[in-house]
Structures are given as C-alpha cells and as structure tokens.
Length: 76
Image 1 (tube, rainbow, N blue to C red):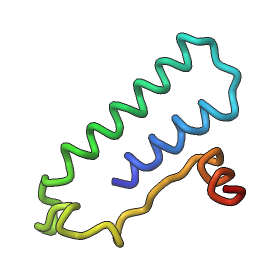
Image 2: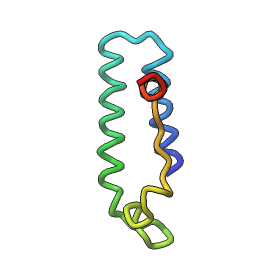
Image 3: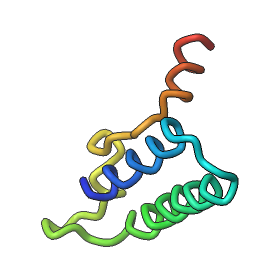
Image 4: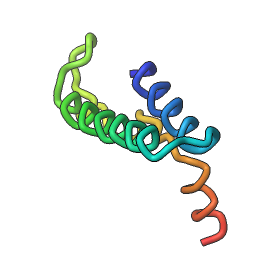
C-alpha cells in the first residue's frame, strides 16, 4: 500500500512541479485515474493479515492531497 501512495505522490509532484506538454500532462492524468481505479479494485481484496482495506476502515488510510487542494482548503 505504501508503494501505491508513493506512486500517487510522484504523479502529483510531476503535475505540479514540472512543466509538461499537453501529451505528458494527459499521461500523468491517466496515471492518476488508473491509480484511483486500482485502489477501488483492491478495496475488497484481503490483506495478508486477513481483513480488506474497506474492513480496516478509512481511519487507517492516509489521503494524499495535492498542494492545490490544500490551498483551496486553507483559503476556501
């Protein structure tokens, strides 16, 4: 799970910190969409300990937010 969170963080960093061409930005956005779809699929797959991520509950998961989301939250 940590690798998935790191992947999302890296994609968000690419989108925010590096000037990207339209095709590159599209690829990053597709990667973020694929990431979200993978998380949805894995929500009901048992962990090695037995419970699924959904059963573990959202309080055990970390939500990674982009700085854009944080800015809107702090200034909203």
